[in-house]
Image (cartoon, rainbow, N blue to C red; front, side):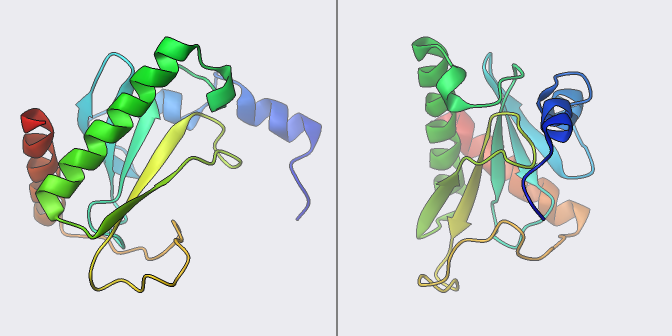
Length: 154
């Protein structure tokens, strides 16, 4: 499939109808659960836990690219990403966390935090479409609690 048409891309860029604007602040949505919110971002635990601890940091404001942020907002976004990474690290002790900022399918600024564990193949490229590995609600809630608690300590 070639890149989006101009009409499709314009529609994807629009704040009205943006899926992340519509549900990133909710306690639960079909893709993730809310762990915490700051003045700048929402931290969400993905329901697909093919990478245990997989989270997203989503900018509250509808901005489609890092290059569009003012320096103070950019610093606040990355500070929240760093804090989320520290919390995931403290809660789940991964070997490494990979940080991915893409947005060609969902042009709303967000960062995927994909923990890499000792059971993962370190030579394999990261793939956010791994899985899905859907945990029981209790397991997902416990993982969210652990990350939330670790985040409060950082």
